[in-house]
Amino acid sequence: MDEKKLMQTLRARLTDARLVHSVNVAESAHALAERWGADPEKAHWAGLAHDVCKCDSVDKMTNILTRAGYDFLDCERGNAKLLHAPAGATFLRESGLCADDDILDAVRYHTTGRAGMSLLEKVVFMADLVSADRDYPDVETVRQMTFSDLDGALNYALAFIKAQLERRGEAIHPNSVVRDED
Ligand SMILES: [Fe+2]
Ligand SMILES: [Fe+2]
Image (cartoon, rainbow, N blue to C red; front, side):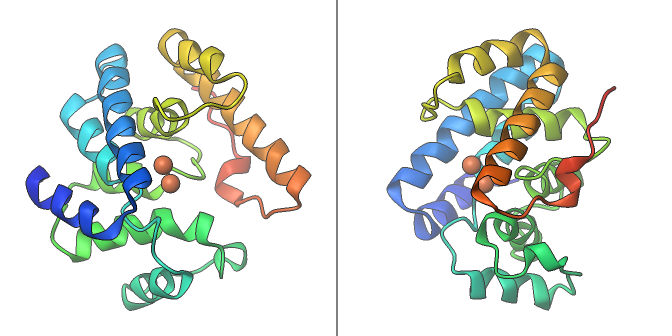
């Protein structure tokens, strides 16, 4: 986990705004990890890296995943929002930037969540939603909730995201439908 090499990669691959977001998510993830007993270093690194493919074209993300033998779901094909997370995890592993499965899974599931999420996955998922650059109407409520009730915040966020996707008529990834109650 070479942070200097990661930062060089992020500077080359991300827009300035996306880089700022990534640094903010790393800070939030670090703080949440300390609050909930996850590994703060891994949380920080995963937060920095989570959107490494976010500025790639759909074709590029699709190629990264295809080369790695990824089994695409129908809802993922052509969907940049859904592809950038598994593409990011695959890119980080294939480029030799990260070999840590905990971190790679936190990146892989940062958009959809999944049933049985690890603590690190939850921390990175929520950090992405409450980072300093986020400014949706109830961000402050969600921010506070992440420090008082992480699972409650997660379920609240998943319900919110699901409602938003339904309103926009966008695909809901099957991973997001399953709630984790533990
Ligand atoms: Fe993302
Ligand atoms: Fe993000």
